[in-house]
Amino acid sequence: MTRYLAHHANEDGGWGLHLEGKSTVFATGLYYVMLRLLGHDKDHPLLAPARACLLSHGGAAGIQQWGKIWLACLNLYGWEGVHCIPTDLWALPEWLPFHPWRWWVQCRAVYLPTSYLWSNRCTVPLTPLLQEIRDEIYTAPYRAVDFRRARSHTAPSDALRTISPLLLCCFALLRVWFDFLRLRWLHRLADRRVSRLMRSEEHNTGYHCLAPVNKAFHMAAAHFADGPGSERVRRHRETVDVYLWLGPRGMTCGGTKGVQVWDTAFIVQAAAEAGLAADPRFRAPLLRALGFLDKS
Image (cartoon, rainbow, N blue to C red; front, side, top):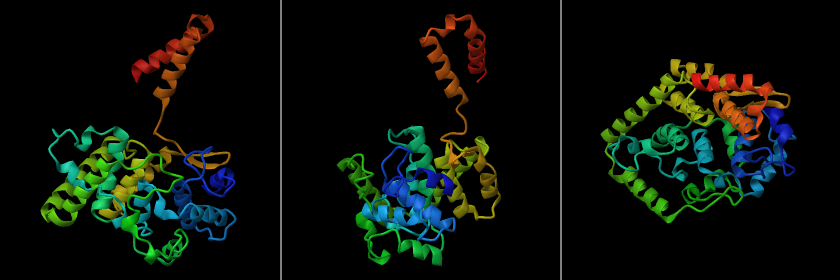
């Protein structure tokens, strides 16, 4: 993983969301923390420029929401700085037009486990290493960071659009509900609902989950809910390699468990549009490809 990042660091020392992307707080912040957790010193040739890049963009306080969640789980960010993701939404009647089951699948799959992490304020104990990282990723001392104010703040390098007033209003209403109105038994009910849905996805997909992002959040939720030595966490660890692959420049990660149907469908479409279907040399392989799609 270190070798891969060393090959693909930008000139300013940071990283973007993809290999050709400009440096962002999201990527640079999470990669910096990851490299420190892997055992590299803060003055490592890869980390010193990355930290300078991160701080030049305002530090980790401006990281995007998924980054805020990961840092909060690692005790590197205050949960009060993450907008509401209550498990309660999953306990609502399913006929409601805004029930999470109606959301786009990638959004729904990620905000299922993160709602558990947020609602239960899941975080690891503070260690000397995490204390050091706290002092490295912010432009001010950690205790001086106003996480509540950073809740809606995204660094200019990462912001694609502003948060709409309607969404801010919804967040405010959810915050009032969570902080002052929600009963404890409702919390437990919603937690059980979310836990059942998470376990159902894990069972139905052989612990692969939909994609690597929600699998990682599922692993974190399982760690906090069942314990690091639990059978559930063990099953998750055994299936991590389905997404990871080692290339000539280091370890990287695939976006899904497999894209055979996706690739085959596009190949057939491209061949048809190029007129190759009429060529006898391509007829047999294209028929086999169509047969594969039928079976899939």
